[in-house]
Image 1 (cartoon, helix red, strand yellow):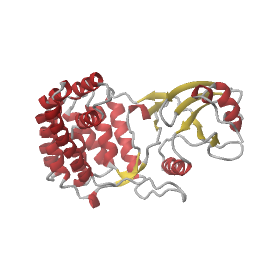
Image 2: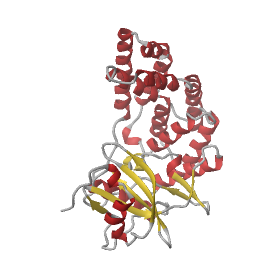
Image 3: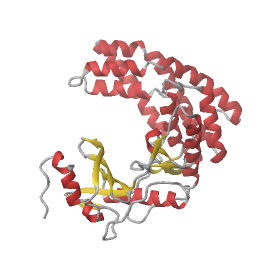
Image 4: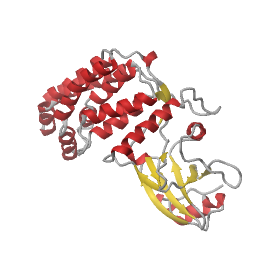
Length: 353
């Protein structure tokens, strides 16, 4: 029985990885570079492994074997449909992962390339097109038997309603607390409430049965979209993937894009990307309602205030004040965007949001 390492430094040392993990792949003579490390309750790490003939990505994952089987199922499904995703490589014993000291490691080929540039219009369009292909090709997806049941498909209206009520609770707490955070919260409350009300109103008209379903990446952002030297697009890090409402992926992508300074709630850019996605993967009226609901809701304002009042006695108040102020920097742009995109979508897609 192997003895558990005494510290994370030991766990993630080059000697430890070579001795306990890489020898399963006959790669113990390779060089190791630690690319990413997250010191959370469940440590996560990514290494670049360079042998004489090739480079690989070694990842210490944070989920169990049943969940890994689901991720593996999704990777295999998409690869067979022509979507470039990293494939899990076999150990010399024919296994898809190494389990050691209660930790699970997987190895994939290293993808040489550069991440999607959100200031490059071609990159953005190709990324949205690829997302549409991912969704279209996985409508009938089913995981390998024994996989974790990674299915979302939760009511977004109920979720938004809970968030809306949290905002009202935070308002009451701010009124009674009267500290600096509370004052900033109250100064910006009415504008954020407008967004929350609009989001909730549109969400109430979503028909869950009409929403498109597929494999969803779960973290479809620039760092997980790579372009190789031949300009092929690769989609990496499907650790959060699940079978869910497809439009959530697009909403997540657009919300990240639209909050940037250079693309700050750019209405014409958003509409052009929506057309690109719709051309390759037809959007239903409820898909569009979900998307506008998703982009409209004041997510950061809601979450920061909820977390602050929940942990008010032990949090770093200065840090929370900074986060709250930052969350409102683009508030007027978001309000104008929401006011303008609703009639544009209604006219272009002949629907009522």
